Amino acid sequence: MRKSQLTFCFVIVGLLGATQFSRGADPAHSDQPAVAPTEAISKLKEGNGRYTGGNLQHPGQTAERRTELANTQHPFATIVSCSDSRVPPEIVFDQGLGDLFIVRVAGNVINDEGLGSIEYSVDHLGTRLILVLGHQSCGAVKAARETIAAKGKAPGHIESLVTAIKPAVEATAKDDLETTVKANVKNVVQALRSSTPILKAEVDSGKIQVIGGYYSLDTGAVTFLDEK
Image (cartoon, rainbow, N blue to C red; front, top):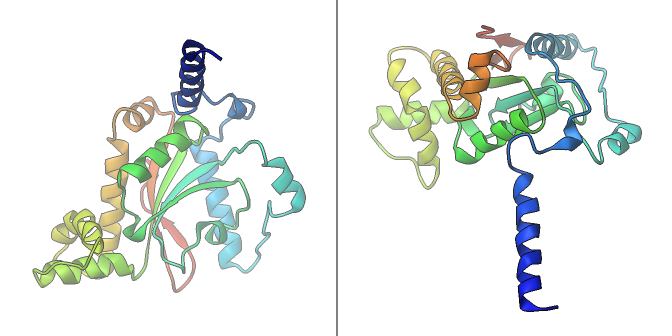
């Protein structure tokens, strides 16, 4: 193959690969109607009700479901949650394979990679609900409060979490930990609602909804903080 032909092939391959991340370029997911935010919230509430009531259905965990999802996926909601091992969204909401698109990081904060993942779920997978899920006794938020109160610095990259949570800590300095946890959730919700160029336009048009939630370690119940 001549050099010019080889160069042309590389260019074509590169362009085809790039389209996988361009807006609306995922035909594999266009055959399924998107789940409306209100319906997605209802599904989450129903699943959490089964979880807290001890009536878990463990849906979508069969070999047939796994095969069905081998070439496509249609998650009905995106969950931004803490990495805490006690708060696995699929279990908390009694969902199965392919139901939830999940971004997890300590303190349920957002960085560029996390934001890109959320944008991908909205733009390519068609999710119309984003839930930011905080939880009782969040260790990341507690560490941020203690570090800031001591005017110290957290070790290593943990400091980046402290920086991200700092606005919530400063706004609730005289309040308890749970107030700070909820303030941090609300800050992330607002940040996502105002994020350009993708999410803000979708929120403003009413296509997607971004809300907050708070998980109780004691009861397993999720309280939805803002459903507007």
